[in-house]
Image 1: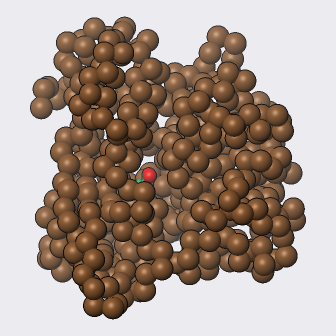
Image 2: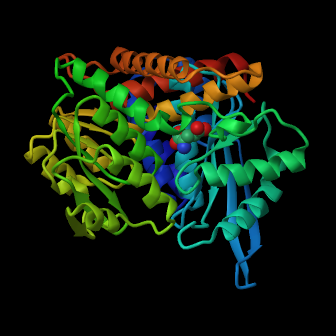
Length: 444
Ligand code: 2IT
């Protein structure tokens, strides 16, 4: 593969799209060897076709705030690749959202969805709108204005959005309500819906639960029990919540959670009602964790990241590039055993390289956090069948899917010395599935 020249051409075409270029580079470097064994891929221009999204919708979202002022945000939907199923992926509402971040997320989503074994293509969307400090009515008006544009591009067999950062149960309710009104259909063109209108049990927990099921499998390869281990978690939203719940249930102790304002260290463990309190914090719309420290009398570290604390397991659960090389060094010096990205691309490329060099168990987001979208796939199945599975039915399927993803990573990622390079394993397994399907379907 002419990796260097492909990357150079992409950089020239899309200058400044750092996250997107970072995600593409990681995948290309890890699939190079396998790709070169398949000259037919090169002939079919698989890479050139895979790195560009199928199409991108960009639109303005005008809405009126509570003071009567007109506000204008940008909205996007990146339909990345639908070779193996309808475009599928979340919507992110966050001030940091740019075309670059959504392209990176859509690219990652394509491989992640392939890994789930379910028939879903990759997509992502969102807006630079931030729910921080907005009233409920403002959030509703924004969601409705956003949907007024997006609805014509999505559908149960074309593109099925879901939540992501800033888009939780409330936002999905407002978005779906407007979609349903405009599209005049009710087939569940959205996942993460409320239980009363087509949602699936376990979907809210699924990203965090799936992450811990994956960590369990990773530790098992080394004969290590998660029980009694200390866990550093970043973030305090839906993903961090699910991860804290499952980690605690498995007998581990979660000692940190964090927000844009800093992190809290709770030596007794974030457990029981303290986990419920995370939801309250999220719903307050203030985007800070400092009140946790006050409420439970623990230490708050303003402006700092949780990776400076000693922990056996580190779980980034917030946003991309939230753990850098310095953080990786600190964690390694403190004896970290396992680092698993439950956020998408939670670690910088330098941090990932260091973990792999030092043979730390490292799980990349597209494998570790695939339980969220996998359970979205299960929600789509239930909608199509017009029935609901029980929580244990969904959870059992989720566990099986995570085990399967772990196996796929081992098949392609096992090194001669026995170390499992999960980055390589996940990238190759995801790529091979999409590439083979693209080969079968011709140049389209
Ligand atoms: O990053 C992700 O996989 C998600 N935000 C969930 C996507 C989905 O369609 O459930």
